[in-house]
Length: 258
Length: 326
Image 1 (tube, rainbow over the protein chains, first blue to last red):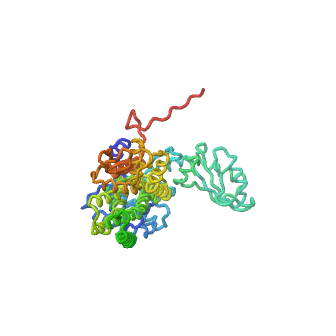
Image 2 (cartoon, rainbow over the protein chains, first blue to last red):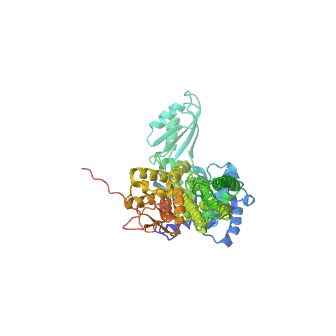
Image 3 (cartoon, chains in turn cyan, green):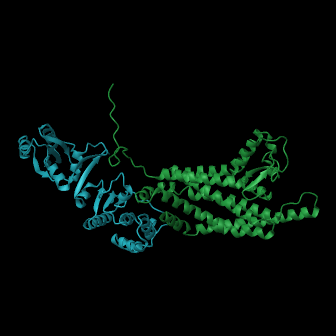
């Protein structure tokens, strides 16, 4: 870690890392500036720098006005931002953030995302974990997927999604004969994961939307469309869907961790 | 250590709670001093008026011993209440891991917690000092007695805080840590006394042993010397008995650190008796030794564990070899 051995020089490594847990532990009877001051002392920040640094970091996370407020009186979003400011007291090179946006309202999420982007421009390396995969694509350059302690895949966001597009996903809308289409698709070679989007229609005459995946055995999806139309399925829309991180995740993991 | 102690003291001294505890404690102590003075003065006056029996001890001495005893009984439950939540409380609030990711060392963390707990309880002792030394005005009390009484109180507080801190580090919840801490305090205060009484019965000859430091008369048969030493050790295990026995040992005039005892254990200060360490000395060694041990153990529990590969320290620990099929 930045030239230090994690096992043999843990103290030096700790000075390089800023850690933010997913749960914000609250100290009772503590004001915001005292919270910052306490952790600055833990990181041996010199006394003459502590006050100025506290002000600057609180301003950075937009909590300057809450300097003298009790920590327990802050909202969840404010606490998360304070926790992020706390991870920066010793100017670490690496930030490890566990679910930084969990439990936040939409506005607080956007603010958190902006803050992470700002930290990135400041040259910090940020490792963050999240279950909200759609948001990761906005702030991350690289992703890694871990299941049961094993790193299953890693790479840049673009590469991972591009890798996924080799196995295309197609979305299709039919005005009737949805169940017939489902049966037909399920029986075709190279077609997988056929499913109704939303609830399956009660009768075969009702319109429906289906999604399915294509393996590398089917280089051109028009062959599938031709077979469906040939079988009398009234296809209203048929288009390839853009892959996202959730698709990457679903394909790579085996669903062992819920 | 300073970071932890500063944070704890800031939180502890904030608001009215800390000052309310101080005020109530001093009020209780003052009321008790007045009651004890009134009762003692009356008893001494009656004894002087009617005469007959042996002269009672001076008012100052009775007052000082009584106040110190009350102070000990008031403070003993407070030390665990502050220390037992020190580390377990951090775990409950989920702030423990957060602090452990900082470069702060387990040693500084535990000592900081101990310092903050002790400083408040010691504050209680210091604010009561004027009430405690009031007894000096009545005479019959030496400065050595005052200093030793104060010392026994402080050593007890250090031990109770250390025990509570140890349980706070070992136990997951504050409640469990508090229960074990209070049990230890109870055993320390009254348990040693019971052990001493039981030992007196079991050892038989103890009627003539150190038990007479309290009863003041000779026994039926002479105890063996090891029994006398054992009795001294048991007496020294409780601040209550150690304090009382130290007062008697000081009255022999043999010295502050040691006193002589007749070979049958009956007469303290016997001219040709065997020299024994004063109970407060044994008490100090035992209590401070145990305190150091408990604080050290707490540090061990708090320290984050790092898996190490003994052969190659920089590599991950070796995986368990796969078991071969028979």
